Length: 169
Length: 210
Image (cartoon, rainbow over all chains, first blue to last red; front, top):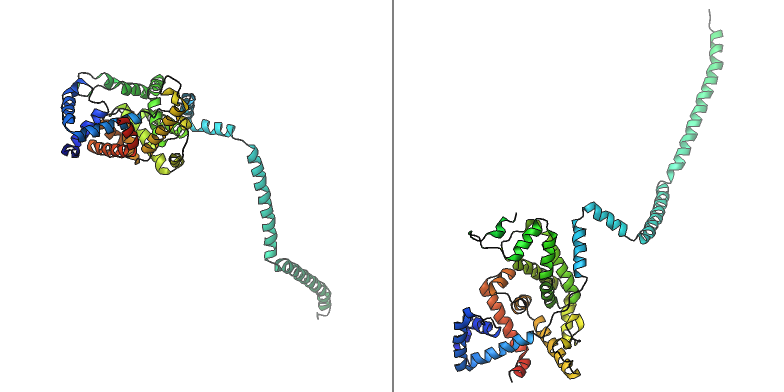
């Protein structure tokens, strides 16, 4: 039970249009009548039409869901929000933001940062253990040098008048 | 800005009513956008709902569709029918959502049995004026589930083509414009899709034919 016309896309289109009621208009009357005459003699096309009509009617079972009553209001809100300049949107976002978790978060970050800095400064002083000792040693050396210079000055003060008195006239 | 609207005797074809409204929206008339929204809201939501098979997702995506239309108002040019443009956006968003896999759950649920009211189908009482019996209701729900499954399992483009052909009653040429392919490609998509549906719903068809 086959029909060679079922392999032709134009004939298939005609059958689809027939089953979907798209030939029910005066402009398609001749095409519709010709197809009906063909189907009276062609069991394959008649079966195709019955199956396609049944699918078409089965699809009618699927009624759409009712639309939310909030749909329009939500859309207009989004449109108004989109129409605002960016700084207004930012200000609005900041105003609407929940700051409580932000405060806790900031405090936690500060505590962690303080701990890190304390640890880091301690590590830096421990990084050059000779630095403090060397400074003390240098200070001792400077002090020793100053003492030596002072001693030399005192020695000069004693020695120079004695040398002047012993010089022949 | 709307001088093209009244082109009747000129070379350009007259604009459809929706395109005229959209041109007014472009000129700052928000009321016209409200008119377009009222007219096309339900068809768009229903189309997207049947594509993604999830009511909440469908409404969210439909919001995005109208938001994009509004945002594009300043660059709007009536080069095609308004509904072609609108459904192109809707199809694009629905296909992207399905491809992203964000809404795969909705389709995965196709295998699981569920009541017809879930995701917002109208209850069985909408089918008949009389209150249905429990048996009628169960039969209706089973058949509805089978229809949903059969459509949900179609490849995405075939699904979109069938939904536009069946529920939006679009012409082949308009479906082709929405899907950005040739008219013959659309016919091919539809033939294959209906062939699959005839096979998947064969048991319902046999019952109907008897």
